[in-house]
Length: 225
Ligand SMILES: NC(=O)c1ccc[n+]([C@@H]2O[C@H](COP(=O)([O-])OP(=O)(O)OC[C@H]3O[C@@H](n4cnc5c(N)ncnc54)[C@H](OP(=O)(O)O)[C@@H]3O)[C@@H](O)[C@H]2O)c1
Picture: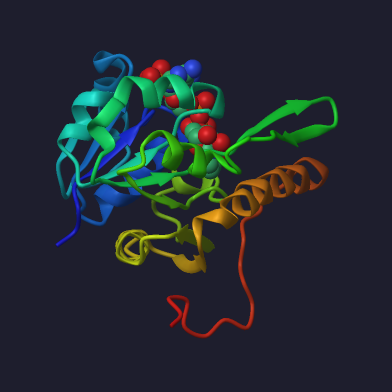
């Protein structure tokens, strides 16, 4: 059975895009925000873009929606990650926590990766919430692509983590999205590479006025052994 999903920072483009895709698969999703009214508005907007709402599309304060979920997707900007983790406190304990957070900023030359002392945004979550089952995924999937719910995604999604069952659960969940191929990619210590890859993609987008994604060639079984 699919886990119930909460999206912390789910009112942003990424959160709304993932919510739409997962609800379309029949997964129950709760959109979180610092402001429950904003969460409700985002959930209503997502529902408005779907022909049929096949599952629960809930909304609430970030802490409240985490309490309803088995699996939490963190979709806040890097600058908001530490305060968000402080607010969530022990609520992430025991839950699968998917970090989609890319530590980056922009200057006149495009995206710039930020140095994270813990190694990556995902490892920062693991350091602050040591009982959470942290998985890194979704960094390179563009919100703009996700929100076009009637178009297959056409993306490979590296999924990284140290808890094999959590990684498998995330890969299975994301695999329900049409055109999304989750690729189990190794331990959480490589999350910075997946996060940094987004900077490269955003720079390619800037140079070519495109919206590129990732595909790994010559890959047989994406789950691996
Ligand atoms: N956009 C993409 O295409 C994309 C793709 C892959 C990964 N990502 C990553 O996913 C994350 C979310 O991306 P996004 O574009 O959806 O971001 P966003 O729109 O900038 O932020 C998402 C939500 O986070 C909350 N937020 C903003 N500042 C915050 C703060 N200081 N503290 C706590 N919460 C704050 C806001 O929700 P409330 O005000 O309602 O609380 C906002 O709607 C980022 O880390 C990004 O790098 C984005």
